[in-house]
Image (cartoon, rainbow, N blue to C red; front, side):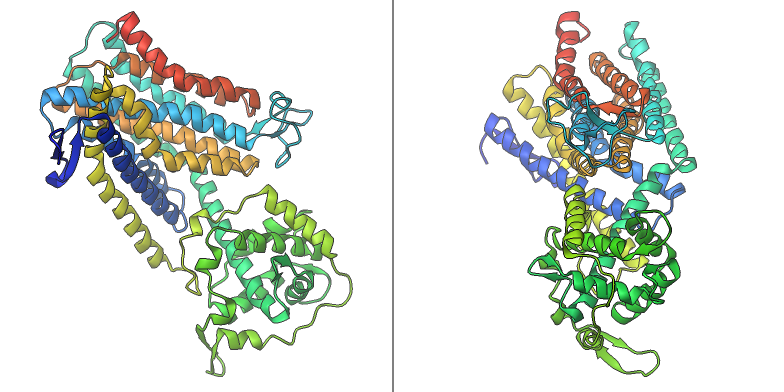
Length: 565
């Protein structure tokens, strides 16, 4: 170990170096550790959404878990050091708080608008999954449209930032070191957290949408796997990467019990139940049936026609097979050997043997959907909507859906792993940011942590926002912005409350007026835009993005020209 480095952090095993190169390298290493922690917590939370109903747990647990990485860095910045060191390092906590909020409200907000933009109709409403204007020509003719609940979430976010006034008003009066102010701000912020969680419990629309999206993804995946399994007996649904329309028509025949060319809910559930018992022993629920109806029934008559079935199923199959890692996690159909005990005869058969038992099926005679029409509609759907399998790429295909207990265990492992990584890397990250700030000659660790830490602790939220926005649909865009507003609300309540607890516990002096004014300004500006209407035109991308560098410039101006420091 060089003379410029020392060991610190948990177990005294994490180096902290003063040179620029070594310090920058350690920031990357510890940042990757926090990034992995945030991803594990996000994955564990996603699993919980499959089994939790909106309400007490969904309203309390999930928002708090999302804020844990930032909160851990904030707490680590002020504890475990002398008062003098804490006064310096707590700037890392404020930089994390401010940087996280500003990044979400500028880069995530504007990026989601850009990737999710669609053409606007004559009423100024975005036309889902339609983009014909170029980047320049479409600045005023394209945009996104959200729902009323998203506007309400923007208003809630703005109201949460008023907590900053509890500490800003005394600071404006020259009171910078009053523990009563610190305590009052901490209490108000945590009361705001309790109020927000109560709001989530009483008005859990965001959780409902998340749960609905997660269940729909699993239903689509399961339906595609059924099609691939049964389609193997009639030449395969996919042949050299192309849809076998004859096989789709034969599969439709299995669902259309009365042969009238339409599949109703009773026929759909009966066929799914029979196929599930044959291949997977899975219990088919009404929720599964509803997903099929919602996804396939394009004319809204409550029935699935042959063209609707063929186009919808082709899209599902393409969506599944084009997902990253599909070939690696799904063994070839012929190699699956899980067994099934017939409940009537008691005979044991392998899955391959059962598949051969339906090999005598023949394509349905009569009206069929043409190859070109099915392929055209399926390819359009696949191009318009990217596969929703990112969260499923790591799931092993065990031949049956995981039970509730299995989901809870896996979620617990992921969440525990994330918490463990945070416990290991939060404190070393604070030290590394502080050292890098000193080696670069920055006036405060705030500036380095403003840029570096949020991209580690909030990377999963940023990627998730851009991914959902890329769907170019109103419900996805609404979910994207609701997540952003919700994350900022947690910063303004939980993270601010913990920061003020650190200030109170260590007896530190308040030196963050310019930083909190910046948070307040950015939150109110973007919040007003989000609450002013339901459609945002693409040209808003540029002023909102510009607020990110301008925020740092504003802090410098207030600190070194106005003299607030």
